[in-house]
Length: 407
Image (cartoon, rainbow, N blue to C red):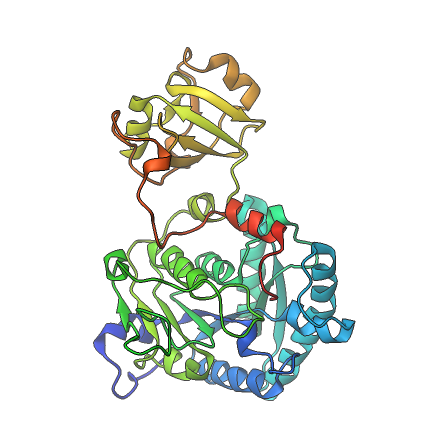
């Protein structure tokens, strides 16, 4: 990716060409064979592309699914188990096989591999966040290729990322990446079901308005992945809001994606890099409680005009302590912000509506929506939103229900 621009590369991909640190995420469907298990040819093809990028001066962090899928056959499992314990067992066996295969494949290019397994806690807690960043930075500095995956062996529903697309977006922010590439078995985002008559690939997305009316499928076609296009669009929003452009394409087009050539769907960056704890607060935290606010307090938070004071709290739900993430709702019950509590629930119950004590500091707040006007209907009458970023809590509930296909 260094040197002269690729032949025929459009100017709209200038950010792609300029990237010197890239996170590449690959899904299970791009690594496994139709019969099940890891496909050595597919792994080697991806590794060859990454090795060429490395030789051109680009640092690459690989976020790879495939651990649970790789562990199914050795354990005699015909499909992804629904219970967490057997998922963890499959991940335990499969993760070793996955990293061993990458190690052998990268060795063909004289490159070493470093395995890094993460849970949401490792991104969400400040100490673990620093440790994760130092580990990834040091692996890159020493010339190895970090291979990142969710730590399915120990992750419970409460501390799951929920999908490796989401993990990749958060890792891209963690390592200060300049590009995120999401690879799967589909060559981009389509305005309808891929392969159906009249359905067209969307080459670029410059903002949320470009997705108006687009219906996005929720599952892949292979039966071994955890996400589908919905999770990729969600991940793209997380990354682009933090100033990181995203390319979604098929694994077979990985070389074109890294080379800045026209392929897949390019999501242009829409925001600037956010503070680490705020990105986690918005996209990876699971609230420990809920605070109902007065109309004035809700409006103050939405406009970023000050902190939340106890006088602005009308109701406290949950058993949280100082430092826990809490959800902030307006009088209609609509979520307007998320923040880190400066007071525990028991103390706040004594102070709510009466004290001017600070409950959430302004620097620990993430506005999520404008509060509804006083005469607005309740949440049940709100408009249907087709595409939105799910919260970590929603991912946790989905994982606990066992309704996700195998990673």
